[in-house]
Image 1 (spheres, rainbow, N blue to C red):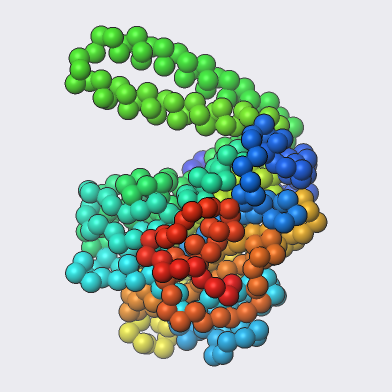
Image 2: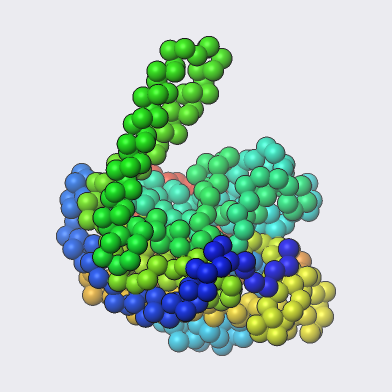
Length: 467
């Protein structure tokens, strides 16, 4: 799939998005009525929730947050990896945009996802790269019979999701596909999703920044959103009550073979009711003093940055503490004409060691790192409730499930860990971990998020030390 721009969802609104984005970004640093500023004391008590221990909080009582950001097609190893371990590790060409944030980052070498290797399954490395990135399991090669595993973000969300209005957020700057065949006979669900609630169910990501913003903060202009969101929740509840009553009346007239279908339907209704009840428990709804994004921008860099800005807002307002972001699916053949590269990314990644093609892929790698660097800078510039920055109180993974796109390798993955984890991480270093499963990193992060009793995750062999 070769795309150099995005088609607007609403052309008039999209044009407005480009005009108002500057005001939106400027306002991100000056949001009003943010609930996190009112909830520095035990967050669970303010929400009327029983205290369940130090889940997803730092030593100061501020929220601890985790995010996972995926970039496609691996990286050019020679341009990504520095020559030596130690403190001066961001001099490599691909990582230069992060140089100003070196004290807040760790470059993690020697982490593998060997469950993504072909073996008897043959081709399909792109699907496996996405599908195993946060699960660490071997995927079932099928277009119809999906078998993956729960992802680490959802493991965290199950522990800490009750503390926020949204247990987790799943985002993408790519298409949404949950059915059909994609890479070498693998289901598209593997390739276009990195978050999974269970082995058969991906968490559908949101691709439209406007819909994401309205989901978080409600419809309308600043000052109107809280009331509008409460009104919509009341309407939703009224509709659900009517539907539930109607379904139960119908249940008495159904044949036994239809009972299971209706039970499944009612289960879905109850899940929606639970989400509404969860949102209502938190009472005050934040209303940032920024304009609502109009939709999906035409410009890809602008699109990525708006989604990153919304991630900052979601963390800043303590709307969630767990986020996954798919910048583009592995195998993406997007072109980058804006930096003088009209060829498709995936096509270039099969460079067969041709110098010119490798140079272009390295420039694309650097482009993605540049977008991530802006996100890191915004987190670092945003104060948290305890006086530290959001970045200090976060653990942000930036990486790919492919290592070398030319060879489709899955060992020594390009992975950066940003943030201080509320003081529990030791950034400012490049550390080679010597061929450990990437899931060992996830276990160590889960510990810090308060997940208890998780002895193994995916193909983990233990907890990653020295992070």
